[in-house]
Image 1 (tube, rainbow, N blue to C red):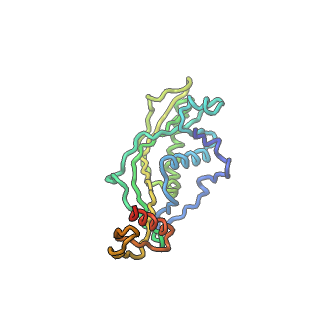
Image 2: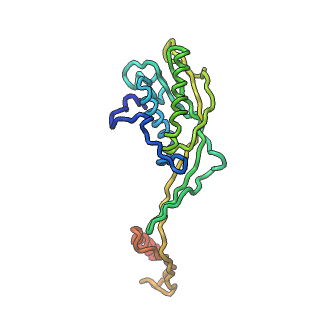
Image 3: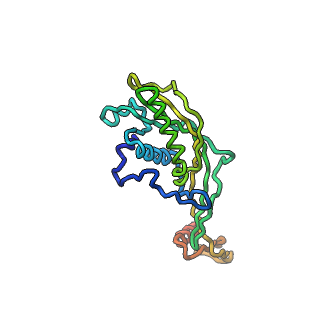
Length: 240
């Protein structure tokens, strides 16, 4: 269960969103990494509860929160759901994003973007309060989108606000309003690349103890930590 009200302040005080440094690079925000779906909603929940500590933010339906938390749950509550996830544009597979070149071992960064339909469900006692709660959610997405993008979100766009009649209330006199966003995330996958210093082919006339010829052997950079291991594997294959 993701109860951000309970998590707040357990490790270190959470700075208010307006206290973050808006460092820019060439007029654009410099991202600190990349955010997947869970990391995005986690950050969103921390910002929301920093701005409005009275709001409970969770992935669980409110009717299940009492059993999970062991206490009576009351409004205001905001829950979130991933309604749909598809590939973004024509990126049907990972593509190279960046090469981090090092003397011995380099790293290729592969990435793939995804489109997500994110839904936030707002629960309150009265209709006007539910509308006000949606305004708070929309305000967070509008005013702190720069923060989400700085932390690695690709982008987010407003879709629609509506009353989701498929959601069942867990008690009387509780109403719901929902808002959906088109959220773009990017999955990044590092791939280590062993640098080859040079390649040498041994003479095919070399023989082992059984009189068999050696196959060609690739000689890797002897500074690489995998050099000895690769050499043993190659020799074992030759002697088998």
